[in-house]
Image (cartoon, rainbow, N blue to C red; front, side, top):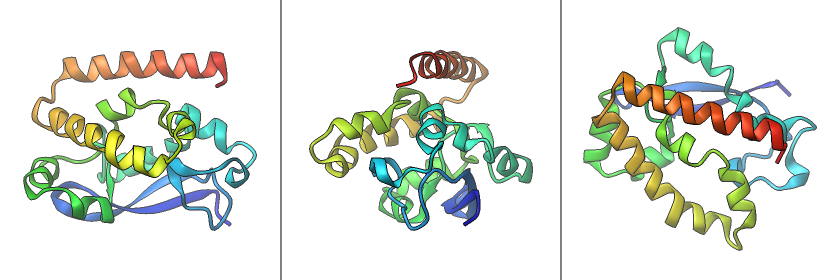
Length: 165
């Protein structure tokens, strides 16, 4: 079992690439935000909570598949359900390591653990908001917006490290 998890994602122009992450779940567990306690590797929950599992994506940035700020790269199955206009808007730019949605839903896994039906809450309540935030960023990119994203992200990260929740 490799320490690096590879996931096929869609990037700029609708072209696929392999997104890299540090593996946080046991082999065979591919439930993402819907993971249960027994599926995590020993440091997996910490890596997810702090988003440190995404550090290998710096390699994706160096390769030119991604940039630092933009919409988060989508899995192919999610990309296919997006309306054509949304795919066009997002496809004009590279996906990024950090976006408005990742700041807004920094503790998404904890929110989903509290839900009676995590998948339904994700697809009916969280995911539509993420789509709106992704498109908003793609249409309104600026250094000032990036600065705000970094500021909020660092505040949430420091809170996650301090509270260990």
